Image 1 (cartoon, rainbow, N blue to C red):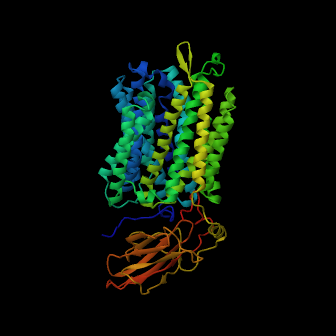
Image 2 (image 1 turned 180 degrees about the horizontal axis):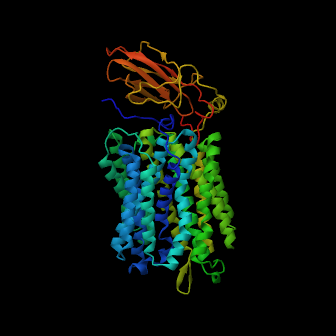
Image 3 (image 1 turned 45 degrees about the vertical axis):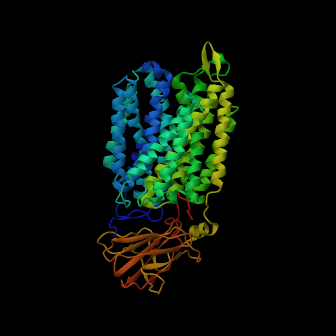
Length: 618
């Protein structure tokens, strides 16, 4: 059956110029991301007091944090896929609504089990980050997309940095339940702003929701993350820890086999296995490790009593204020990222970000003797993480189809979460094993803090090595994009797309090509202006009514096959990131006689087709 949903790829074609998103979309979506970050950071100031507040043992109290992590890890790819299928704005509102319910559940209880359940519901809000990035891709013009995605991707750090001193202030001067009432209020405000300011995308992915895949991924992630977060309590060599790791391997392998056979998988593993997607996701794990290390080390260093000889003796609020520049710097680097990515691509900005992180942690090894030094560490590391986090979604959406944006970015966000989980487990173990006994209380040592920073530095250097192998924009393509004039005759305007009932929308004349081929339907080759193949180009078949009648993606050699639903006249519109678009009309008799249509993509218009915030997936 032909699909009749209006479709476009914001990585290759911008959104409908007749339906521009309002200027409030970016700040509203960024606010949603900040709200999610606040929810995550909420209990950090009172984490050491949770056993007393919940009348339970310390090992049980950690489930309050673990439940949020597990729920967020499960929800992120699932909500992303549901957004692709049912509407990203709708699922964003659903994520925020579940978070509000969870916040209210926690606000009215002191019972451990109910608190764990409420925190798990709060964790579902983690899906807001990939959903917000997906909405931006669908709704924003190309020239605004890079900086907008950077801000959305960095919002998790921005919210965390701003929430830490705020939550500490509330915890010191009010009942700790007020933290949850505040989170619920932010969630409701974010829902209202989203409802009134953010449009629903018309883009929908084909297929159905893969329930079996969702259950398999959920079970596999729980089996993997549970021993990572609880291994230090259970013992890394205990039967429970090893058994769960073994179960995770078995479940995830079985899940992968199912996804490869599924017609509509939850996660397209073939896409995920592409070099640019795989390396980006692995680099995301490393950035996640580096991001969380500073959040674990600096607040403890700042709050340890000065009598230890290395503690800085600051209050909870002052410690939060010293770490707050981490989030503020992440936010301020979004415009800088857009400029770097526009000129050099997101691979370069990712590499620069990782180098800056390494400098921050490396310098931090000798900057632990005064509060102002921790601010310097926060600023430098925050700048690097802001650049790195901003680059990740651009690399992902430059390599996947628009209908997979939510799921692909959800998986990428999951990779960051796995990185933070690994960081929490490893650094927590290091600090515990290097602690010293002071008056019957185990306190982390300066040696442990430095080992933690060294681990973060090693992780980011590993990520730097992975990023170095990411595909780059070819120099010839970058030069032609920078010097290009108007599209050649026969090229579709990159800002045009077909609208139902309006007929095929092409700017300029179309070229008729009807040649004999070796198979039925349309097939041919997509090349650039130099005759080189364009890998992974998108070819959309449009019928006489202006509706999408089919779609194909070219292989690595630029070859495609596309079978129309029947006889008739059609327009084949080809597009690819880093190129202009080409539209060509062709007729198909429906008698099995093949039609060859070769499409040569022109260079983009200067300032229009030039990539902003996205890399060349080829």
